Image (cartoon, rainbow, N blue to C red; front, side, top):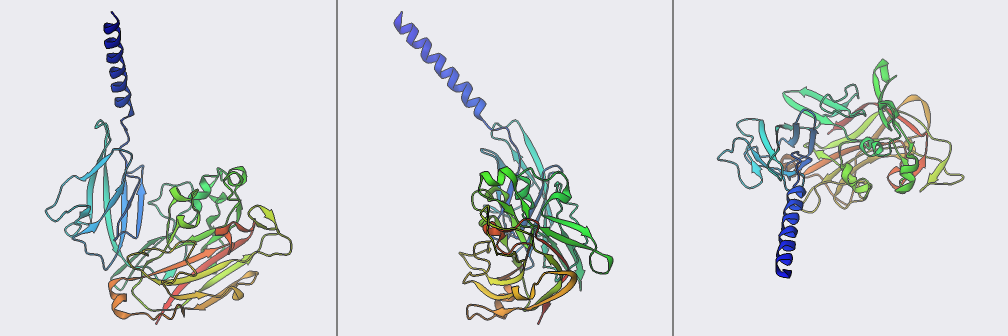
Length: 372
């Protein structure tokens, strides 16, 4: 009798374990991100199931390295596998658009994504007139596209807006730190950057303010709470020798400067605008908020905080790119896309370290990179 009870109990446990195992299988079929040595930007629309991938003009289209970020247990494969495809490499030589099918861990669900590859260069002029139609977000995403001398120049600006969304402080798109507004130069639109309080959520995670920022690169929102500085990835391949960074700005500092949530008397906030050219290698593919001004890979820097005084009128800034780390620009490396360039704007220069004044506001318009 005891044996029968033991056997029955074991069978029940096995059955329960089997049920638990079945229930534990993930039903998600999505692509959460995509990276790879060729990928400079990845823009995913989860509603339309489309992905825009940006690579430099130096990339080999016959073997684009793609590493998809998927839910636990999910798998992905191209709907039509080409002979040129390899392990984690896919050919976009014949067509710049390919379909990839994601299957959930339990095999019951699947989703097909349309992946489009853009081989492009950075624009060199920025008017902040256009918001991206590719981004289904509650905040503004700035977008630039120009066809100059048969060269496609396409870029989506990044900002810390995705991180600010986590605070639940914004009720409308204009409540975010980085927004598009009227009143730019010559009656155009411009970008407004404002340092914001992050509320109780920010205090809980010890991220007390959010500076308004805009930069060339990407923002990794999944890493924002773990390491805010490393959540920013600066830069895009650049194939020219930059001479200067110029444009127009207005700036007003907020009334109370704080450091990590504590008010500091007799300190005044300062905005920041800079351009940085750096060399990539096996260890450094992007700079981030922790090293964008002092990395040993930096070749040239355009920055002058002394020029950026408070002003209520549109005022020109013009910063020369000055050599750094005893480095010079190698023409052969330029052609191969080894160098990357980033432009960064911030309403609080110390915002990445949560130092600044709530209410500090920077307006920027008509920015240009002047090449030699």
